[in-house]
Image (cartoon, rainbow, N blue to C red; front, side):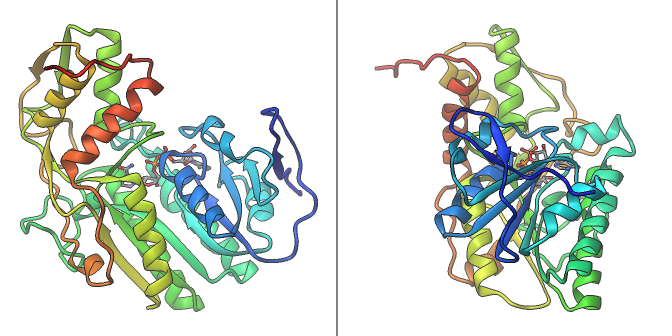
Length: 343
Ligand code: NAD
């Protein structure tokens, strides 16, 4: 069954898109999400026609509002697992950015089939649709959590064995395997990007988002899961998008695997302190204790980015700056008033 493809209108409503030209579209699954909508913006700035396939499970229509009236954007509000929608979405496409997935690592501990269906099952359906339609290029958003608890820091792309600790991580690793197998078996070119923690405007989840939501509920105290000594890399969403575009234009192996991180780390304790300071709440920070925030949490993540740097891309922001920028951009989005600087 053909599926409705919509154009966004200035009024905030939508209308059926005219029948697309036969080729030249770029498909972004998860294009209404925190990273996806920034990617869509950059692709449009490069003159590409972009089709978004998103079920709005964690992404929002608001993230796509800026594209209203743009005939170079088509939106299909549907699940990747919806065969009709996927068939319509893939038609006339020559590059797929596959970002749609459950983004919340903790959720997999409660809903234990979620990462399997939203991860490898959806990814296999997408790859199979690509094979049928002869779409030969795919970029996949993987994660640092595929490394499990590495013993080597910073952790390079060829570290192994890869033994993830969460169902989310297992799903990402399985997807990497499928992407690689389809690329080698059917002549596709694939990019696998292992992200550090990606933050910035429009984030829908993550530690900074969680801390702000907690302070919204109770500005007097901030509960931090774990002992606060977890240290991870925080990559700005614009560095994430710019590095992916840079790499897809310059690397051409059948499967190209890259860590995408800022090249440094920041602790959860430091993040909690920055959130309290920048919101001006003066909240008491309380730690639940233990080295992990939750079962499956990876307490130390420090991605080696030598492979990325060797291609001539250097992230613009370090982790500390990314944390501050993210807090300041999310505060108005979540209804916090700006705080006058001291002194
Ligand atoms: P996000 O939740 O903002 O974006 C995911 C998007 O996918 C959302 O718009 C959601 O509605 C959509 N989606 C989810 N399941 C879908 C389905 N079955 N069909 C159609 N649409 C679906 O999260 P994000 O931070 O932008 O993450 C994008 C990708 O990057 C995800 O695959 C995530 O796992 C991965 N990733 C993110 C981070 C990070 O720190 N943000 C780190 C590592 C990997």
